[in-house]
Image (cartoon, rainbow, N blue to C red; front, side):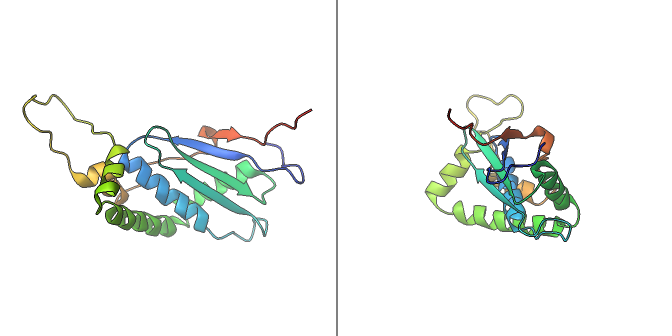
Length: 169
């Protein structure tokens, strides 16, 4: 990817997020971790990543913008790789923060309803018509997944690249 011209906006990297509680919980944790990463000595001094996650149950998306980097794709690739290496404790702490935030949000009726709406109920196997299907609350809300390995694998190659708008003639 070519360097960004002076004064131009860097491109956005966007990933669609599956409509389930586990993916939404991990997207929130990853985004929080990316926003809190410290720059390495090799990175430009003013470089940073802006991350935002929209948990819309119809089409959730995680969007990154690399600011102050000469090669935004390489910069994003390096920052994502650090989450699996030296910044793993940061990601773990943000997953714990997300778990606590989800627990608090689910304490209200409206919060629980919104979280359940973002996680469609998937019933494994046939279920009798007259029997209610029992599902674990933590699985539906994504809490169970936050205790394990990240449920999302974001790569620059899988991202939708959104560049600045073309100038009007």
